[in-house]
Image (cartoon, one colour):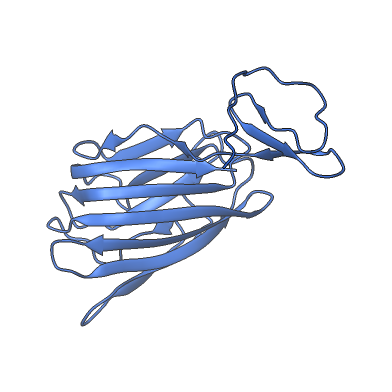
Amino acid sequence: MSILVLTSDTLIGTPAAGNLEYNGQFFGTDSNASRAQLQRITQGTAVASTSGTSIDFTGIPAWVKKITVIFSGVSTNGTSNLICRVGNGSIVSSGYASGAVRTGLGGAGATSTAGYLLSPDNASAVITHGQIVIANISGNSWNATFVLGRSDDGYAYLGGGSLTLGGTLDRVRITTVNGTDTFDAGTVNILYEG
């Protein structure tokens, strides 16, 4: 078994085929010695979702092609549905095509153009766990899919949506449709990758 140890954060210039470099990112080369950037998964800083009306993650690098938003025990004090919004310079709150459904008997469904809708029938007692995956289709077009399990009753929220931004995505916000319900439990974090 071989082990590769990277001991320098200095680029070696134009790499020969097969070289690997490290400078905060990983790089590799193909047989034609053209450099390809191989982004590692970067974890954000976890945010306690125990207060406030929104949770923001900003400063997402331009090279990012996939973002995973992770929920652990997230709850709000009201009945307004959960929603995820993205932006470039500021949060975008229109132009989405999204839908969500709740599993189980009498499962409800809903749609939204104001963000990636995450729940069709939220309630103050609902506690959610799971993840939202926001992936780049091409250019500034982004697709979202999600599964959020409800630990209070065993149901789940499922759904997805799409949006084309006017520029490069650099932020994600988790909030509620009315924007005034307050988070009162849990933790939210993101992972992003190229």
